[in-house]
Length: 360
Image (cartoon, rainbow, N blue to C red; front, side):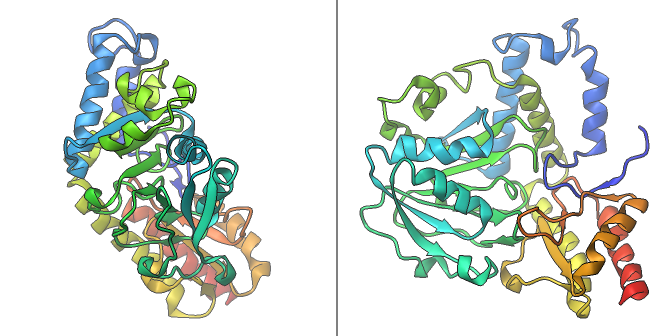
């Protein structure tokens, strides 16, 4: 394989080299079928086996019971911003949304077009740097569900524990699923786009309680109904077969490398390498409450903001790529998902130390 840079992209993000090697080896001819995986029908037994194995891996990794349904859908996590209220808060029913960062805010904005939206908590006034305890969120008893994003990639903040609401709990875990050991039974609906932690863009994993399927709005077109996708085992229409295939490879890689608990351990270790340096002085700054800092997306600024573009330009010369913060907030962001090696994080830490010595 040709030389690879240290890829800190927030998504589409880095994949393990050994997974890429497997894909490359199989691409021109999968097993003995005489075709590539992207040339065969999604109804072919070969692909049905791939799909079944991917779901089985997800169930083992997350310890899913039979009361949960696993779906692989298209449209990214953004599509779920609309589908969730359409299906479960139809006819302008009330739904409670927390604003704890850019993505949860976008989800709330989309939901407001569909349902009677209630903002049960917002940390917007403090710059999304500190999230109130979930027990302090103000939630109406007549809400159909509670929704939030567990890890906000743009602000680099997360909710590091599981919820305990009395209402169905819907959570966007696009950037942290498989990086944190969670108790799935505390959630009723989990969704995550693939391009952070388990493959290329174009497919979204959804895990929901089967009892929710009975509550979908049956007046919607079939393509918008979760119950119809479930009835057809995620093949109501032709799925993104290649992304599904790669996702299965990633799930196998997780199982071979210690599972979710090991991924969480490594994520904490890798992120702390950068946080320790940031907290050492005043040159680099991170405004997020320490107990709520993301272990997947480390955001930081330089005290003298005039140095930030120079930082990014020099970083590229050392093969440290995609460190520019989101356009809405600026600064820098190092996304260190499960496939990111500790060596890459150390390389960034060392560069940051040298840059501070030269310009601090």
